[in-house]
Image (tube, rainbow, N blue to C red; front, side):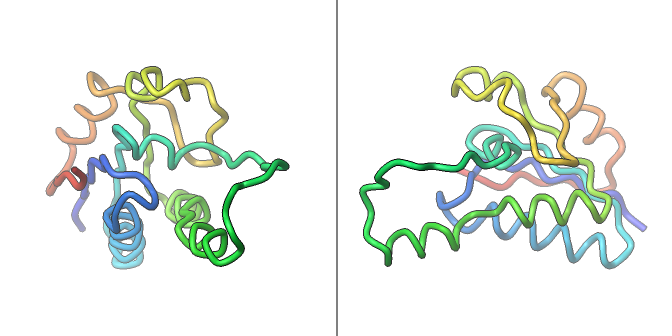
Length: 131
């Protein structure tokens, strides 16, 4: 079976690419393939554990429900549990002020120079999603 790497640049609710990358990863894993996900740019926020918000959201219930449907943390956890290697780019986390936030289980801190390079060198197929 193949090893597939996705470099994901788009985050949740930005467009449908993050959701697609996670669904694709699940399908590939279920098909017996190995999956690497490198979270870069806004996608690095997918790695972070959610923090409960207690203040006023400034959104009505309909918008809150819609935004809740855009959360992808459970899909990230599922893909990791099924065996995907998921690394972030600490440099893009740093510039966003999220470096050091606690990751969800199955996600590791990474970087372009070693994590992504290793993913690419050991992959049979690789592509980038985002923009």
